[in-house]
Length: 391
Ligand SMILES: Cc1cc2nc3c(=O)[nH]c(=O)nc-3n(C[C@H](O)[C@H](O)[C@H](O)COP(=O)(O)OP(=O)(O)OC[C@H]3O[C@@H](n4cnc5c(N)ncnc54)[C@H](O)[C@@H]3O)c2cc1C
Image (cartoon, rainbow, N blue to C red; front, side, top):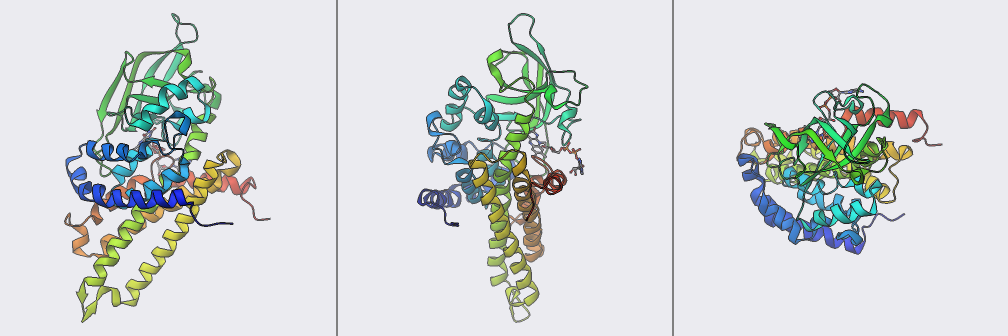
């Protein structure tokens, strides 16, 4: 057993740490206040080669895998969860293509993500189908004019990066829309330029502002046969893609928690009260200690889950290990951001400090890509099915 990162990953962490401090930290507040997409940060990520971390070398990436992306996101999330989300979006929509896409799809769609010429979005949720994805109503019917082609109709919602994306991984019912069967759902690559594709309403969010979240409207969109990802009826792909993403979302949580605790510790060590500093009180020290323990526990779960995902271990039997990382790291982020507000007192509640921003951002993490309750269901299923057992 070896807990050390490889030399390459240690160097990656150092370089992203510097980039995050130099470029992301000074921009975080402005991105939140204006809500404008930070093109300068995207360019900095592109120039540093971070957009292709999880893309294999043969498709223009650096092949650093999920663990490499996890480490980079952890560093960026110390200052801005919006910028961390920009990195996450290099994997969420490309995951199904990497897992089950054809060679042609990989050649066509992955190099643009790695080089930053193209961006992508992930369309699974609908207004009536979030946790219960099988309830989706977006429908794909056979194209009468094109052999093997499909015609898509529906509205995907809450899609991160919907405005900036050049293509989308979209899930639709190829079977009866009222069917609850998993094999009634298929994944497609839908290009932004296809006729009938448009961006609908944009959400007004409480946090993670700067990367838009909104609707993708599909009206009689004709998708060629070669843009089906994997098999028709391959809903399993949605779950495999999401399972392999658990460490990447978890990384946004641990990074945020680390940033919040470090900031609060700096503050309480200089804030004077009762003839000493706030950090002198044992009650405060114990809160710091308990959170530090939880952050390290979350980091270990997150790194292990990233390592598992890189081994291709994101099928059913590995789900509890992956889901517990997402659950725990994002819950720790909520807790850490709350504690950082509290430890700064009134100052923590004001926009002079980033604590209130982290508090708003953290709330997103326990909802997206499977809520905390859904992760608990998955962990429980794993234990009940003996996939997580200690005997
Ligand atoms: C900022 C943001 C960005 C997003 N980006 C994307 C994106 O890029 N692509 C995309 O497809 N989606 C995206 N989403 C949607 C996100 O994945 C869904 O919000 C999430 O899956 C939960 O679905 P829901 O909001 O419909 O909640 P619901 O499913 O309606 O759940 C409501 C509550 O009920 C609980 N609940 C539901 N089912 C169960 C159960 N079986 N047991 C116990 N409790 C349960 C939930 O945990 C939650 O607390 C985004 C959401 C947000 C907020």
